[in-house]
Length: 490
Image (tube, rainbow, N blue to C red):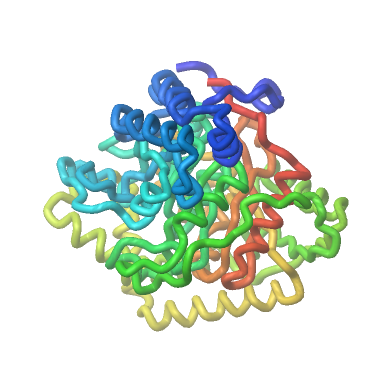
């Protein structure tokens, strides 16, 4: 295994190789016939042939089928057919999380006991990606049941962070984050019930979007869980909006889903203009401890916005890591935990240690509090966020207090952040409060690097269902503090 990259060589902008081409630029080149979908696919396939054995981000590849679809897309662009305009992802390679079912392919959730199970139909987001012309060429790793903040499992082994191979890309969409950072695809699907999209985005220097609950359809019956959500990841804000638009909208299989086709602007020509923008900066969301680089990089993002004309005011929330943990595990204990137990009756000894602990923690929390008591806590937290955000366009905060995580660790005994030992690893991250307040859109974007070469990130939180605000601010941060052109040296 090569040594981790921690110095400036990983941070200095370089000329992007083809496998790092962003999706929006690729589409423009496809339409002008300066680039073929076949060429782009071959570039990411070639990259996977060398990089995936190092990062272990892919569970399955479908390169031959993808090549046939790329040739078909190439021909459609060559003919200039009007159907191209109706297929906004035509010819783009996309990796999908294994939990997002692909008809006829594995559907295991990373569980050894589910090995050999296949999906009868596409997940709604996968079906929409394929209908939009996206080419699913590979699928990505996750921890079992997508229930951890690191990505390793007895089924797939350890997924590593391309920026530092000893560290984790985060979880649960760690395979998606690692694949994007390593140049294995320009677009990826992810999911998020307590931070599983935003944490990998932070740790891999990519962009992840937690849409308001119901905006992107899920798979029944757990699509009814108001904490959860499926969403897009990419390397740029524009690419993330592009994929969000395709994934969004009402679906007959998920009655919580709403609205028609997504209409988020993909690009903001005036992205750097933030004059008059009002930003609430909340560093700790109460008492969350922060790694030194996380705090410094978050303040640097806020200062950049202020220097560009935004009004940035620091605010305080009354939350505690312990209180948020108790609230989310009460919720898990009445919904997700029992579903996990039901799915693993008789095979408990095959589960990863973090899965067994998650189930036990959820069960214990449900015994301490009823679901109604948990709802009361959720209502209080929602009201407190609404109060502190009143008068502001968005709230800005770190994504994770921990600067990075060990690739193969379980964190069963808690986590230490900035010298403070926390009882549970979920307390090391500032994401779960916004699953409690899950009508709020949250865009996670890069903020800088930590001492070990692993990226750090911030969350841009919007008012309920006010999606465009977080993309506009994310685009501003990207324009004012650009991260494009910085790639890990695998």
